[in-house]
Length: 129
Image 1 (cartoon, one colour):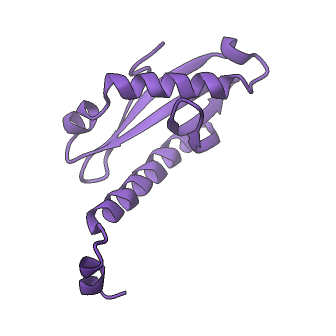
Image 2 (image 1 turned 90 degrees about the vertical axis):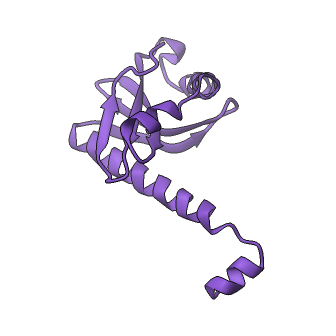
Image 3 (image 1 turned 60 degrees about the vertical axis):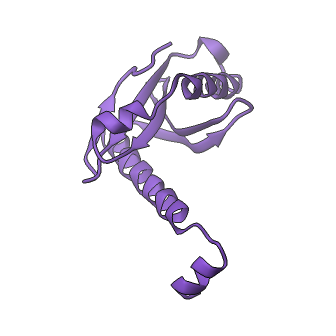
């Protein structure tokens, strides 16, 4: 479809670009965790409470990762709201229900910040519980 046709039909090109940028940021973050020995468990996992971008396991512990991309790290961090944290906790609780140790599974909640250059900053236990 030609770009002008897309505009005329009312498609939101910026949404598609943002979606693709988000996927790219998640890919970059996932590779970084995997290089550090974490095993991927799920990506864009959706539970009753909401969505979790990435879930990893290492030594029996789970790490729930929220990926935030913006022009700089501070702006990316500012995009993680209290409401969103509550949704992530609720989704994580649903995910943990499927684990052998359930809610007693060792967990950590990280924020992975990605700036406009693609650099990544991992904030471990960013909103620990």
